[in-house]
Amino acid sequence: MNGLELSEQYFEEYGRPMLERDFPDLLPFLAAGLVGRGSERFGFDDAVSRDHDFEPGFLLFLPGEDVVDRRTAFLLERAYAKLPKEYAGVRRNLVAPVGGPRHGVFRTAEFYEKHIGGAAVPTTYEEWKALPEYARAEATNGKVFFDYYGQFSDIRQALRKLPEDIRRKRLAGQLLLAAQAGQYNYGRCLAHGETGAAQLALHAFAEACLASVFLLNNRPMPFYKWQFRALRDCSVLSALAPELEYLLSSGNAKPEAEKKIKKTEAISAALIAEVKRQGLSTSESPDLEDHAYQVNDSIKDADIRMRHILDLV
Image 1 (tube, rainbow, N blue to C red):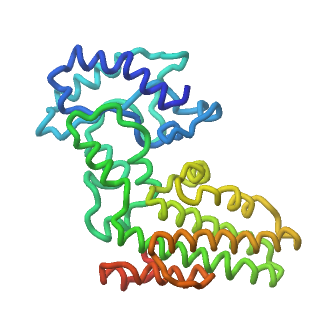
Image 2: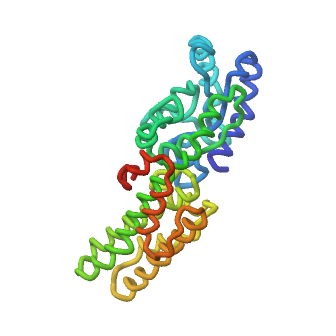
Image 3: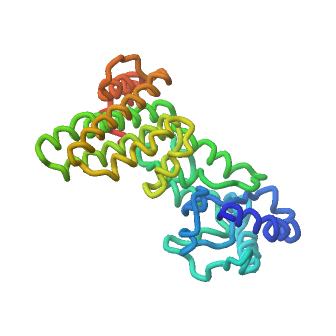
């Protein structure tokens, strides 16, 4: 049983009955689920993940004090604390993990302020610029078991996809970085005999390609630890996962270096094909850089389009 399953079963067996029995009048204002930081919220946990912060638990979300007062929230917190301390052979943690508790009762605004830096969906260019993709992933992962009030899920749903011009600006920048690192600098570093720098170039290329794939899927990219795992679940370009892993894990001796140069070109071609399929570029160039500028030129908002191409990277 993974963490999401453990959480939902614990909620259905103990959480929901407690709410229906002790807080029936509060139910219309509640949401419950497992969302936020931790591999189990992404469904990526395994046996290794159980060495810390793994426990039966869930989150309850409340609107502001104008809807649910402090005393009611306090009573709900006490009721949650009294739920069984062990379930399915797993004990609840007695000490909160670094960064604060990951289960229990939260105000919806409190949860989103902690994860995305604000209580509502960004509305301006600068607000989107300040929001890292890993934070957006943490705010939209996991599962909501129910949301009778709707506030939590409305924000969550609006965060799942970037505004189109923001997506294109980020994509243009990442494609340009991929072009510079993979199609240009990797081979030049090898020619200089700088194998360490060549590997750094491949690392930069892989990072930019990963970011580009998630943007082409219009899906938040998680923390680096889970990027390859999440890439394998993407509907578009998931086949690039083993190719990018090979670039990062193999050496730079001449036979492998020649193979890696070919792979960077093949990966670049796959990105270009998807960019064109989505109607973001019409160029026939094999160079990612040319497509990066076409993506930037396709941005409708003139102010966003005229900003530096790397402004959202």
